[in-house]
Amino acid sequence: MMADMPSGRRPRRVGIARIGIYAFLLTSAAFFLLPLWIMVTTSLKPMAEVWEGNILALPAEFTVEPWIRAWSEACTGLECNGISVGFWNSVRILIPSLVLSILAGAVNGYALSFWRVRGANLLFGILLAGAFIPYQVFLYPLVRLFSQAGIYNSLACIVIVHVVFGMPIMTLLFRNFYASLPVELFNAARIDGGGFWTIFTHVLLPMSAPIIVVATILQVTGIWNDFIFGLTFAGRENLPMTVQLNNIVNSTQGERAYNVDMAATILTALVPLAVYFLSGRWFVRGIAAGAVKG
Image (cartoon, rainbow, N blue to C red; front, top):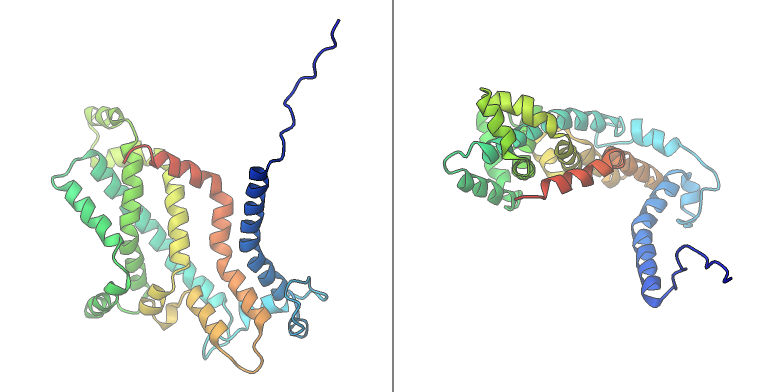
C-alpha cells in the first residue's frame, strides 16, 4: 500500500515579489518608528549624554527628570509652569467641542437622510464645499465677528470655532451611516407616532456607536492637534497644549534642553495616540459601516 501523503499546505516559495513586499514594509516601519525611537531615547537621557551625539543609542543613564521638567517646570513664555497648564486647557477645549460637534453632525446627518427637507441636497453641497476652503480665509472675518459679539479670546470662542469647522465632516459621516440603514426602521417608528427627536434618540442614536467612535477619533485628533485656531481664538488664558509646546521648543534660555523638548512633544501626542490604540478596530468597523451608501 502506498504511504499516506502528508497533509497540509505546501511551504510557499520566497520569491522576489515577496522579498520586495517585506522590504517595503520594513522600510516604511523604520521611516515612521525611527523618529519616535530618537524622541523616546533622547527624552530619557541627561543633557551631557545628549551632547555626545549618539542619538540612536539607548540611554547609558536613564533619567525621568526631562519628563518632570517638561510637565511642571518648562518655560512656555514668561511663565515656567510646564506643559501641564496647556494640557488642562486642551481638555477644557476638547470636551465641549467634541460633544457639540458630534451631536450637531448626527442631527444634521439624520435630518438629511430621512426627513427629506426641501433643498437638502443643495444645503448639503454648500456645507461640504465649506470644508474645502482653507481655514486661513476665515480667520480675519471670524476675528471681527467674535470681537463684535464680545466673546473673542475666550473658551466659548474656540469651542464655537471647532464645532463650526467640524460640522461638514461630521455631517458627511453621519449622513452616509444613516443612509446605509434600512428605511423601514424609520417608517415603522413614524407609524408608531414617533416624532423627530423621539426617533433620533430612541431608534437611530443607540445604533450609532460605530460611527460615533469614528467621529470621536477624527475630532479628538483634529481638535487636540490644532495650533492655528488655538493661537488665534483661545486667548492667553486658554492656550492649548500645542501652542505651549511651540513656546517651549522655540524659547531659548541658556542651554537648549533637547531632552525636555522631546519629552514635551511626546506628552502632547499621548492623548491622540491613546485614542487610536484603544479604539482602532472600532474605527475600521465604523468607516466600513458608513461607506455602504453615499
